[in-house]
Image 1: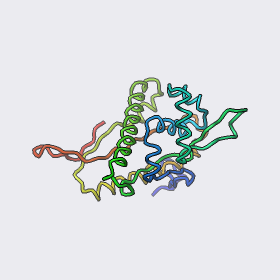
Image 2: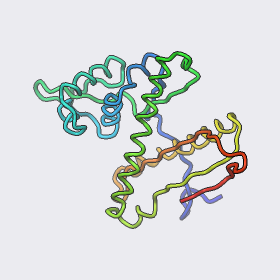
Image 3: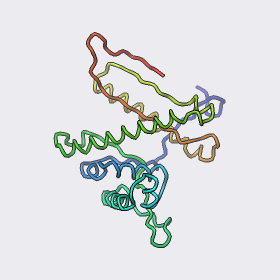
Image 4: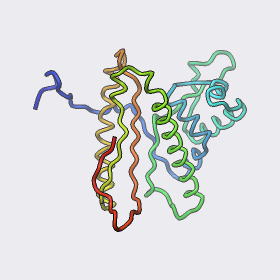
Length: 218
């Protein structure tokens, strides 16, 4: 195995501990499961502290709506004041974590209220993924050639048990998390850019005469 100092070698990566991810419980799920609150939380995570007015302009919402939902997010612990950014009476907000995790076994999905909140959250995430991917496809010609070659748009099909699907998800997550070690290293790199990875995995029904096989498409 080549050492990390050799050309072409891949250094051993360890995800930084400061990347805080919050696991949702029934109460926090209810507090976040609203389309505008999720957009506000995502905007603060991705772009850093901002005021309600700044977020209103960015998200094409009224400042009254963003102010109200920011206060609701604060009540559930998703955002907090960022007083070091404020001037005068300006109120700045920042996210308290860099992501969220939904673990269905911690929820009572037989409860229609909790199940409805999960549906809102998951559909908002899916809509956001679709929007981001559509934006990339519509603007990829504006990026340097190296970036136009560095994207991926693939899908894979397997025949798995639920336990095997969980193993796939966990092992993929471990690999993806390990790449956070590059973030500090690339902080001043001119050719580095935020790089999004969407991971979708789900069972589906197929025709008995056409079972899925392992495949990849780009």
